[in-house]
Image 1: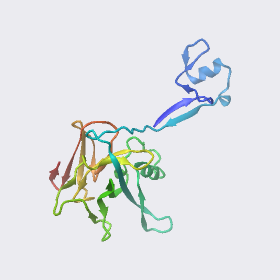
Image 2: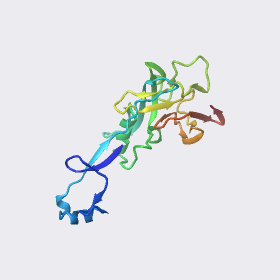
Image 3: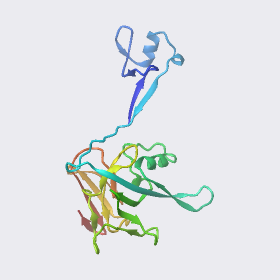
Image 4: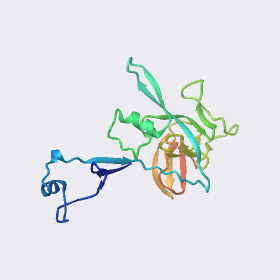
Length: 220
């Protein structure tokens, strides 16, 4: 998000200058124009950085829907209830009600108590929570008897169907939510890693690779 200072007329303020044109701080500027701080108003203009021209191997990415679920203590009892969100921004808003100091740019729901319970891309469901139990998952698009990585990031990539149009990249692992360790690389350098970190936000162009380590076996 871009944040800029502006006057009440909407004019962007990138510096303060004295009447003689010399740059100064706000306090000296107010003295030079004989205005008290209580009479001078500054405004914050904000805008969201949105990238809509992504190309994946020369093609436009499709829409992706990721369901994030978090177990939260009920307001009416000591029981836990599951709350679901369908965008990174919605997860962020829910997280900041408890922890307002988290920065948006580096935020990932999976590092803040959320679990992914469904991934749908181009109306095809690649992962979904089973009706048989909260810790059981189904992989409708996987080949029978498949193991390890079922769907790689060159397939599980798309734009959120939300206002932010966040580009997401993921991998579907056979043992979803098994505490496998995911290490993501961009242009050969590791830029994010963690347990069950199967979906990440993409903010920069580049070549992305992920390795998955599960009980001593590494999948790439």
